[in-house]
Length: 161
Length: 280
Image (cartoon, rainbow over all chains, first blue to last red; front, top):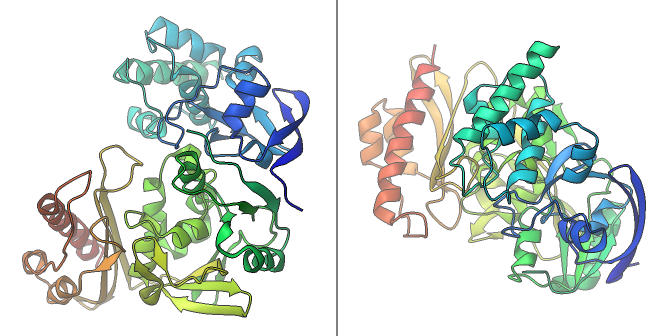
């Protein structure tokens, strides 16, 4: 059986969602257009910029390189979920404190990617931080402030444990 | 941009996937990790009528040592290969290459078989497979067959795969104490497609190296062996190997042919040193 539209059922930020979607709709467009979760941003639409980064089944993915229909049965977390749960509260505070954002377009994806690195535990080196966020473009900050913020949170979390 | 409309179906078994491919022929595309395919759909460089999602096929994502070979299932995701102890121990060249493939979010979705079947000339894994003298398992309507990496990559995004066939696994020889490998690539941003890259393998033989295989990528329509440089390097002279580099890259958006050829020599020096230093 194949069709141009399909029913999907998934969990988004802890809430059960059932929807009828176009097969061609990408995950990030589904989140933004159908669920009004506009924190995930659409940038390049071909996997280069990282603005659409979200978590699917606990792992970060490009929201523009996955179809909504592929998320049937999946657990999806967006910046709205990560923010509301408090999971990235310290990262958000550090980004603000260190001017690690200006226009904010890359920030949701940047936070999701940084949290992906930090949830592994330990204090990554600045080189490791740079490598991990290498798939997320920021055209405002020049990255230094972002690396500072991520490093500061890693150190604070390590102390807190 | 957004993809043109297409129908979508999930293949549950290999047989189902191959049957669907045979039925829909060129109108259908297989969807594995989608990290290249969905980008081309978004840009409307490709507009198939049907996507056959093969992610649900069980048993195609394994990584195992089978005798003297390491077998990697086509649906093994890059992130899984990157974290695999079997790969780290028995396929060190692939372990070296993994961190260079895209970015973490890309590696969480992209698959080993997808990278081989797509055969991007600037991609890491086709070159690794060529450097290791690997083999590709293929399934099609007429059954299964195997193709050596040397005969698989035929042209720009062109492989020995026939339209109704799919890659099911790849096999590379397991490393032993005499195996020597080296890997290097130059990219503008870590994780981007390489301007030039080199995957190399050799066997230590006393004080020398034998069976040297230098597979360059980003310098032609396919990953390419540098045969004359291999011969020169077997003589132990790195400068002679660089002088003998018989590559013919073309200008592209990243660099001119002249720059690419120069950079290929730079990489060869680095990798040749790795191969030599590792020698006991």
